[in-house]
Length: 288
Image 1 (cartoon, rainbow, N blue to C red):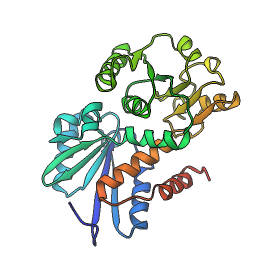
Image 2: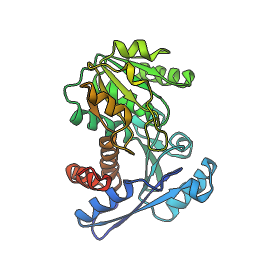
Image 3: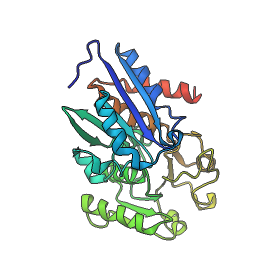
Image 4: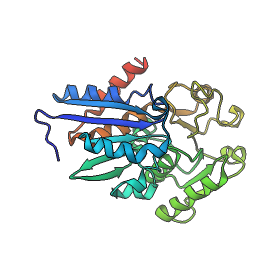
């Protein structure tokens, strides 16, 4: 394990279309605040005109160049798994990796998406009704969010996806971990939202480049909490509609911060100041 004494941590993010990511700034600022240096590189597959087939080469290159670790995002979170030497228990359960550590010649996969969402939820919706929650979207970070929701105590998680087979695979994995019936696949979200206590959007619909809402706003009711994992923009059309009828809401900023908090701890073995990182994120997004 490298020490922080006069040490520079070289880290990076591999994914597609990630040029606007705020993660590098959050990591580098927190390291500077703690008195050491972290260099965080963007490795954008789209800018490099590469696909996931380049992952083996990139992983070897990062190890040889002395990277401490890498963050991994779409579309590489599952494709990276066969290339790693070891998985943390959570990454194995999720079958998804968003953080890779290089230690003693070995590559170890972790997942901080689930823990980042869980911490954001605990802080942002501490009194949420967890009886019946509908989640729209099970691809990308959706599996990690579903895992977090059941860890938080959601009694029944109802999963809807435009690809039912993807939702079924996530539900089966969750039931294996948390118990039969804890996650179910639904085909008619309108009916299930009507009887639900919460709604979570894990699709890209609502992002600046994918405007709109994942479900018609007419499906919402005041008894719901409504959560997004999108943070460009922080207030989506869905959240605005939910607030207007009195719903408790949670934007995607907290997940973005706390997944970075947990990854920073893994990369540097230093205790990050989560509140300081939240303040920095707010400055970066203009939320202050």
